[in-house]
Amino acid sequence: MRGRALLTDLATLAKLRISLLSTLSAATGFVAAARELRAPLAGTLGGTLLLAAAAAALNEVLDARRDALMLRTRERPIPAGRIGRPTALALAAGATIAGAALLWLGAGPVPALLGLGALLWYDAVYTPLKRVTAFAVIPGAIVGALPPAIGWTAAGGALGDARLHALCAFFLLWQVPHFWLLALRHAEDFERGGFPTATRRLSRAQLGRVTWVWTLATATAALLPPLFGLTRSAWGAWALVAAAAAVLPPAWRLVRAPDRPERLGAAFLAVNLLAVALMAVVLADALTGAPY
Image 1 (cartoon, rainbow, N blue to C red):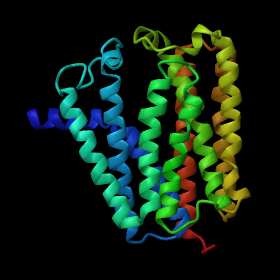
Image 2 (image 1 turned 120 degrees about the horizontal axis):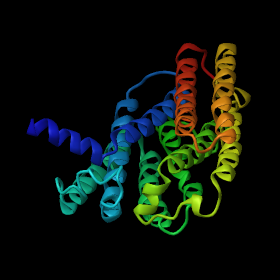
Image 3 (image 1 turned 60 degrees about the vertical axis):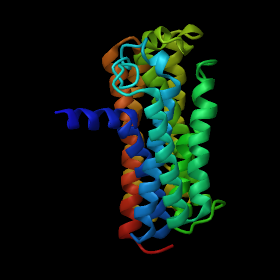
Image 4 (image 1 turned 90 degrees about the horizontal axis):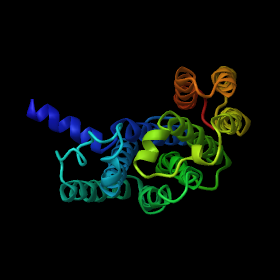
């Protein structure tokens, strides 16, 4: 039982679900560029996962005192006292070194530098900024656009390629409704932890309308892959149209009743499923279609 509890704590420290999502987006970038599965992919995914886990652990070290004040985070391993901050910091440092080395040696300096840049932006820019403004998510969204670029460059793709920009644009925009819907669900808890919240400046009705605009922009960005040639199949284009259309009704219902928790949950789930659907379509199109 102790071993299982330790593994659970380490997974929590690494924010494993979020780290795996970042790794999946790196895989999407890699396969989209390579149009096949080949050797550097394993090192790319391992390095990305380690760097994402390191960024998450360092974030929990920096936010430990505030996490202890919030209901949804007070049982995390650091505020609950099951893992000490020095231990967590050492784990983050080890994961950073290992992840950067895997990317540098297995995929090259550009993916490694992008991975380190994502970690630094998340912990040195976004983490302190979110203590100052509720709108830190907008510059912080850059972090979400970097994993696809890690995968793309690891496969030999160019940073200046418009197809990569189309993919990164989606993840950049997606971060905002994803976070704001989470913040709306847990606004009181964020305030309890001392974080500024948008609900202090805007009513829930206003926030519902703002989130609708960002969701609409995200849904529109889901159509960029076929427009820029990142996906080439007709079925892929129609699948993205369907996925983009499916996210809009839950977001619109939230505008009409922003105080209803079930509508917040439905809109949050729909936005997240859109990201998963886009990655699945891009991956499937690349592996079943002709080369560029």
